[in-house]
Image (tube, rainbow, N blue to C red; front, side, top):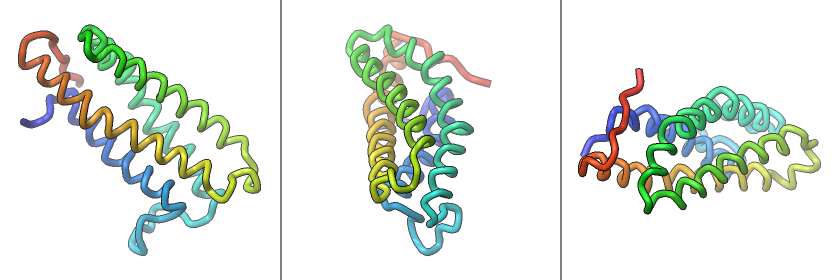
Amino acid sequence: MPRHSLLIPLSHDHHEALLIALRLKKGGPTSQHDRLWPNDLHKQVRSLILYFENELLPHFKIEEEVLFPIASTIGELQQMVTNLLAQHQKMRDKIREISLLREADLHSKKVLSDFGTLLESHVRTEERELFPKLEEAEKQGMISLPVLK
């Protein structure tokens, strides 16, 4: 079943988020052909912060203001939404923490790797669990997902 039009841009964002998560977990570019992600730790931190501010925060805003309130009306999704919101806050907190760390405090990139693991888990939950359940609920007439312009 094709994605609902509300979920398509979010799924596209998720694809990019999974790539960022992989880079963070690997501690550098995904391959020798990945010229977009730096090897230098300071540049990785800057790239992550820019990605977070320019891509993830607007993504979170759509989820928190549009998608999650709709999902919360479905009883079986209420706990999932609570968990996803907590993960959003945890990522916000971790980015603040990462932005204040000196290189010596990055613990051999563990902090970045941990952020990548959290981001990947979050995206997988939305793509594999939340989105299909929302689409099924709409198909059954339980909710109506809006079309974003």
